[in-house]
Length: 300
Image 1: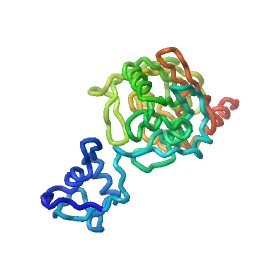
Image 2: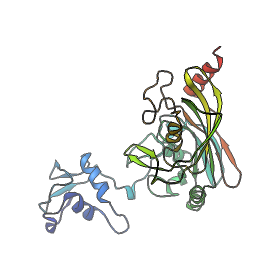
Image 3: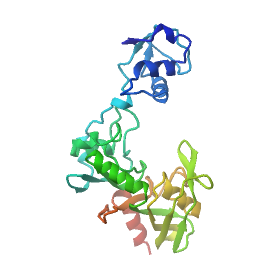
């Protein structure tokens, strides 16, 4: 339990608490405090208060339910690890095959059930290889996307790989079940920028992005099995680019038609990652997506 100083009187609570709880070595952002207040993780005089409320000064602050991001530790998740295939491991790298429906990393302290937790259970050094709640994570996949995710076991390896990703020296190959009309080969080069809290938009003002698309198979009802290759790796890039080309991914609630009776998950799989040194890590299509694809191939 701590108390707001008396000279905090009149300040917004989110700003006053940020100053109270942060230190030069472990700052706590106003944004982080604002979210914690909304979740009820910080109580003032035993009550939930709004971020924009004004401090009276001297309030007792209960921080027992609050963990700052700057000191958060990702707990190991051995139960999830038991369900996640290990694709590759050496003294510097760990490569996992993420299942669809599993978040790549936690969004806030204490969140479990993430691939990062599984990675830490396999190699504890990953937790300290980068910033809190990121550790040695080198890149991310959306919750609904399955496939290859690379982790570094030390800070130097993470920085090296992040630099390769940022300079487009690493190629990612995706497989997707889409619905629409596409030529046998196409290239999407529309810039990608923010389009809202949970989506991006393709158009002027965004970051450069390039996705090379090849149709591998065509099925009835306009269904397509496509390969998408990229080295730019913007957020939602493959999903947004395929939708912009006129063939959104099946099961995509943001860029597609929403829930899909054919497939309960997002029909996108990160099939391979090729590093700048030529090493290639691959993950086979499995589970519900593999079953649907097999059924489509068997149709007369």
